Length: 115
Image (cartoon, rainbow, N blue to C red; front, side):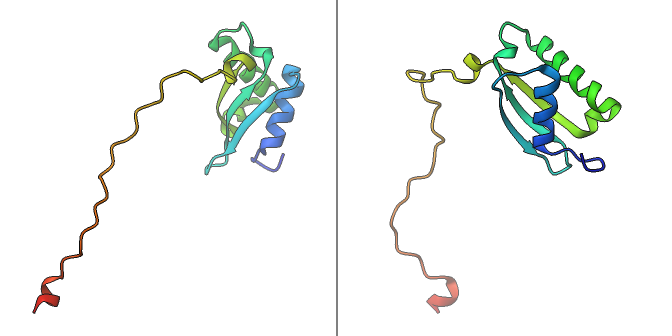
């Protein structure tokens, strides 16, 4: 880890090692302030409450980075495989945003062009 910086790969490695994750998937991004945030997908989280998932993640991060963990890592959301890969077929599509209909009109000449 570079001084005060954490890469996405380093975060993945810490979580895999500390939580003993098997075949996890990560969707992480580096935020402008330098923190890493995103989602962790693993069956390790199956059957856990949201608060238990967060406790496990942050216990692992605190054990690795100490009090600097909150300076290095932003929000991490945890999902089991079945939660992440929800079949959305048949689910109603969200409403489309209303947009103005495009019309073909001749541009009106500006006041200076009419003179």
